[in-house]
Structure formats: C-alpha cells, structure tokens
Image (cartoon, rainbow, N blue to C red; front, side):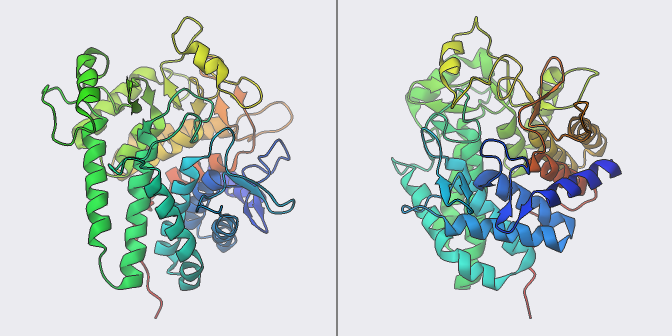
Length: 414
C-alpha cells in the first residue's frame, strides 16, 4: 500500500501544470487539459496529502476553471489555457462539472481558510448556484440532466439522475457554509432547500417495501410505476434515475457510493448495498466496482441506444468503459466511505483492488493508472496515467488513517 501511495503522489505531481491539474500528463485527445470534474477531485485529494505544491496546484485548478466560466455561469467541462480552447461539453453541457467545482471550492476553503481565494471565488460560485437553480426547470428541487450530461457521457441514462442530485446536495451544503461565513449568519432558505433535497433523494431513489405513497414522492404517477416494478428494485440498492417515462433499474456504483459518503444512506441501506456489491464484484480476482451493472449486451433493449451514444468511437462494448468496466476512481471513494463507517477490513480489501489496478503494466512500464479495468479479462482499458485514479487512491488511503473528506471545520486565520 505504501508504494501505491507514493506512486499516486508521484503521478499527481506529474499532472501539475502552471494552470492546475491535468487529467493525464499524456498528450492524448483532450486529457492534457484542466477538467472541471477531474480537477476538483484531484484538488480534494491534494488537500489530504500535506504537500503544499499539490495543494497550490489544486487552488490554481479551481481559479482557472472560475476564470473561464461561461456567460450563464457554466463551469467548463475542460479548458486548455495555452491554446485558449474551452469546452463546456460535447453534444450537451456537463452538469456535474459545475457541481464538483462547488464541492472542490468549498472543501479547499474549509481546510485552508484562504480568504483571498474566497474573495476571488465568491462571484463565480454564486453564478453557478443560480444556473443550477435554473436547471431545476420546474422549481421542484431536482435538477434535470440531459443524456450524456455528466461523467457517464457515453452511457444511457438521463433525467433526474441520482448521482447529480447527490452532488447537488453536497454542493449546496458547501455554499451554505461559505454564505454563513461571509454573512455571519445562516441562510435559512438555502438550508431548508438542502433539507428538502435530502428528503427528495431518500424517498424517490430507494423503494421501501411498505407499499405506501410517500409524501415527498416527486410525481405520483411515476412513483406508482416504480411500485409496480417492485420485484426488480425493492430494497436492493439506490435507483439510478427517473424520467417522465419511468425509472431506470441498473446499479449505478458512483451514486450508491456517494449516497453513503454524503450521509444520506441509513445503516440498513449501507448494509444492503454492501451485500449487493458482494454479488457483482468479480470473485477472487480484483476488488473493484463496475461503473454500472448489469452489463448491456447486444440482446438487451438498451443496446441500440447505447450504440448511438458516443462522441467519436464506440467504447461501451460489454465489460468495457462505462458498460461494466471496473473503475478505480469509484472504488477509491467507496474505500473512503467504508473507512468513515469503521469498516476497516473491507476498506483495506478494496483499496488493495485500487492499488492492483493502478499498478497495471503494459510491458513498457508499470503503474499505468488506467481509466478502467476490463470486467472479464481484467486488462487495462482507456487512457492511462489518470490523475483522478491517483486522487481516489489518496482519498481512500487517508480515510483509512482517519483523515476524511468533508470532515474538517474552518480553521480561521487570526
């Protein structure tokens, strides 16, 4: 584990640039850029390391993203400061870049008490909050995410996606902390909004076995469709999304991890999800979570839509990329949650899985930090030297030492 940690620190350092963290130091496609999502996650990990050069790089990352904020408040999906090229997404914008940006800014400030940073970030932060409120569309508490509008940008989910609602919940809590400090008082309206969002998540994404229509059901007809499909989803795991047409039922690992990490899952729900994970993690091979489960295959109804959902080349063959590929990024955050819950032995097991994945070799070098691992062959896939793989390992490693994300109070400067 110690070698894995040092290798992760080394990779994160190699991905530092004058403008912030690169997604990968390899000059491949657009990975050699500052990314909203990746950059925020890398910045969170940097805060845990105690390495001032990494912490400063995280600060630069967030300020670079703020500097290139769009006219409506949107945070870039990625930006290349050298060429001036800015992307706010592909066929649609990236909702979660904005959410991770708020979370990253909030956590950086909480741990650093950097008032100069707060002064510079305050206006961009408020513009993002306004934009996210507009994306609620019907002003009923949940943001609507178009297809390809978040990290799973080549997968088949859309609408009220749980992963994005969870990030929204955590992001608004970060904003509430900032406003409380700036205004020397509580923003009761925002705090009530956060509380309601938490209730909406708990009620609408976990089907309880009592059969009653809960008071916070987002839409009665859609919820009754969910109840009618109880045999597929009742009390098994958090559900990935719903749209006006109904619910999705696949297991979204990222969302299920964040639901617990952000404090919205009960102890009973955590145990149910842990048990479900044990049924889908490859036995006696490598302890890594798949992005989504079950895999979509050519015989499945969703296959045709999946085949049409890609930017340049089709990546989502069975057990690859987001279609059942195994992701060190998600698994490292699962380790952080397990450690926070006191599940040390299980956390160590999955951190070892992340270490195994990161140390993959291709014959030309070790410690490739690949984007994902094939769900059947266990070979490295996607872009290598992924900074957020290193970040995820660092986050999990520090959680096992008792240093948890989202657990620090502001250290005020005298």
